[in-house]
Length: 419
Image (cartoon, rainbow, N blue to C red):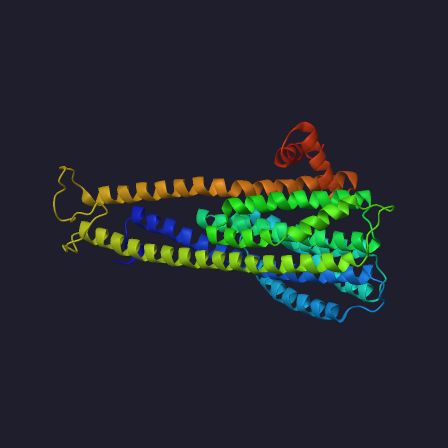
């Protein structure tokens, strides 16, 4: 029986399943965007690292590696822009989509700024701190796009993978910022009090991001992360050395190269794990889409047979959801097999959706916390003219003074509109 000739309850059951399938297909596109943005963020992180090393060093000639890294980043950026252009052409409505498009507009603005920044770096007409800030703004705007795309995630399993990936990406970016800050401090021979505070704040923020990642990552990914952590002993020692430096207790500036090489090896290892997380996410999306398509086909066939049987066109032996032949009277004496099977199917679908909603809410909690913290920082930046790091420090101090978590303080600020 053609679907358009089915009774309305059957058509709407199938429509509900198709809606789930369309949502999964949209989620798969979002996941693809997250993967591409992760690649661009990594390319910009590498370019930022070498830019800092060049600007902090005494050599007036830019390192040859830097030009190659710039070209690599620009090539990946071109791919990302093509994906973003496709999103702009999609007419789908909604507040979530409006926030996503706004995030894309801001990110493109920041990416456009990099052309002039790269030229100033080559000409050594910019301070290392300003170059670092320019790259950090661009990378942060890219991650904001990924967090906005996650709002459309409707599958709990995929969302768990997505939450793990997003928080790992965030932690990796914070690691890149710590690498840059360390290069500046070690090149000078000592760290200022502001730099020391920033190093401590970045370490604490990384711990939080990687802690959330650990809650949602699968065992194989956690084993990889454990190996990376075990290899970080020398970096942790150099963190401690940085906190003990001063103008009166300076260290050899050559330690900047040591710090950079150690941290670059760590970030490269993190990039490998990030790629594994992205591949796992893509596989889960593809599997869920295949499963849902198969379920839709099976359900369409089953409901068509039910409808044919009820109309008297098909006296064939058809098994219902309860595992009995529809033609035979039910053993419990209840008739109307078709009606009962449809109701069973509705109840099953409603229960499955409720369970999915519960699992989804749990997985989204960590994601919402991270976004709320970012929004609170933006409110503080806009209200008081703070830098991103100063806004984060204000949040952290308020949390410590009030005996609250960072997320609780951020919630208060967002609810009060920044007052």
